[in-house]
Amino acid sequence: MEEKKFQPYIPADKVMPEFTVFSVILGALLAIVFGGANAYLGLRVGMTVSASIPAAVISMGVIRFIFKRDSILENNMVQTIGSAGESLAAGAIFTMPALFMWAADGLCDMPSLIDIGLIALCGGVLGVLMMIPLRSALIVKEHGNLGYPEGTACAEVLMAGEEGGAKASTVFCGLGIAAAYKFVADGLKLFPSEVDWTIPSYKGSGFGVDVLPALAGVGYICGPRISSYMFAGSTIAWFVLMPMIALFGSDLIIYPADVSVAELWASGGTWALWSKFIRYIGAGALAAGGIISLIKSLPMIVRTFAAAFKDYGKGGTGTLRTEQDISMKIVLAVCLAVVVLMWLFPGIPVSLTGALIILIFGFFFATVSSRMVGLIGSSNNPVSGMAIATLLIATIILKATGSAGAEGMVGAIAIGSVICIIAAIAGDTSQDLKTGFLLGSTPRKQQYGELVGVCVSAIAIGAILYLLNAAWGFGSEELGAPQAMMMKMVIEGVMGGNLPWALVFTGVFIAIAIEILGLPVLPVAIGIYLPIHLNAGIMAGGLVRLALDKRKYASEKAKSDCIQSGILYTSGMIAGEGVVGILLAVFAVLGINLDLSGVISLGNIGALVLFAALLVSIVLFANKGLKAGKK
Image 1 (cartoon, one colour):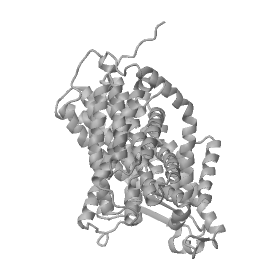
Image 2 (cartoon, rainbow, N blue to C red):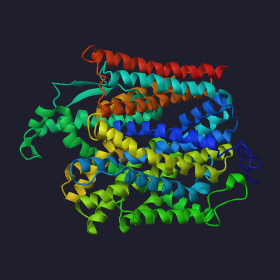
Image 3 (tube, helix red, strand yellow):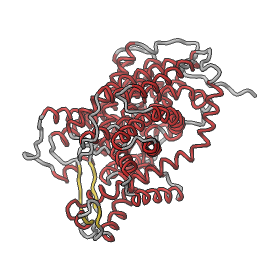
Image 4 (tube, rainbow, N blue to C red):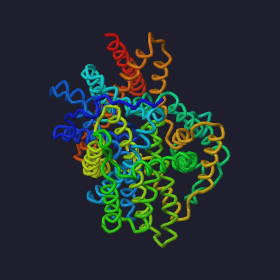
């Protein structure tokens, strides 16, 4: 019996408004907003989340209910363009802040806005184009096997058009509540955004929690499983490794040579031990986790390559509207032009060797990312693990070919930046094309939309990075830039030959032990690397999600409505904190001081009470979705 062909929501023979001026403008605005919010989130906590779902909901609310336009394909184009902003930001902030930190140390010149924009643009364009040959193999042929959770959820939101207004209000409520909370906490400083306790009887350990909306939102969206793995990593670091270092290494002399562990503990406490020891152990665990995930993915990568070239190499486009991609000739020509631009343009510190590394590893990681997000979603895509693996290989190659010192380090981070953005954008493009496949969008037009989103975001990301660096500086308490710090650390260690390999290999073998136990390595490794304060806030959001998951519901649809409403609300929370974070950066640059802590302060107790109220609000808005589903 012949297998029944999938039928999209909008038939292939029906033409509707799709790639319009209106969708491009609204999508570009969302790309900037979500790109800025995700940049702030990633620099603060080292993680980013997908903006596809909130972009789809806002698109539905604005287009259908405010402007009374009724093309679902136009709605989809808005979220396609808008979600590109957060993905490009995710790739950029994992690597590029290292350039600012090296410039502050006098090792290189400060990158210009044009340089940052072009590096981001090259990575973004390659990410979109390198995914196009994979569309038929991954999106069409693997339909039913690869779920693409965000892409499928976006399609469901857009198809539920009659509910779009209520869903959009949920996102905006989350945005407004989190924005107000963030402004009071970090703007007016009426209560601390970080609560910290030491444990005197357990030397070397401590505990704390960052009471921030974005962390609770990340925990809820990632779910209790991923949140608990991350918190387990922090537990290993802060309650096992650090106390052991403090206990057995109290007389150990470390760099600089005149400081012992005991003196380090006396002067800086848990943060000093984390900075000098745990970060390197975490970096080793993350690097090992990234490499392990790639090795496990090799059979899948080979199958995907083979299927992609078999389907796409014949011409690249079909006769039906829903089968038309950008032609292979254009894809190859533009990819070649971008590689030549990276090689020849003086503002992009990439040699011919570096350009070839990008071309080879770029397509490899675009394939890995496109397949990975189909299995685990964009928010859990191990982009940083891919970037670390690339940086290690690129740095070794550059050093071996004579590009050493500061020049080699800058070249390595430029290569890593482009690869990181390629992986992030390829994953986002896959999710968006899955949404389009379900709805009946024209793939070629969606691919053009992705390129528009990439171009707009590349222009904006430089200004965002400059603003945040001018306000607080990367690597500071306000913006730790944990992923970029790790990339910087790895490159400096390999180039200078002074990486504390004993600590790095400790992390590597912890990762191997985790893999042997059958647990996902990357979430635990991220937990080891990041401070426990961040992971405790994420765990709080994960526990709220666990409570809602375990609650009894009348039906599976009721449960889905409840959980989905919570996701929309927490997505708005993440965006709200990010937008206010950028606003506070503007105030800091202008010298505007809003600190009222000297007049009134709610203290740690007040901070915990308000954070608890914020967690309760997630449950309330999740229940709102449950009630809406009964109507």
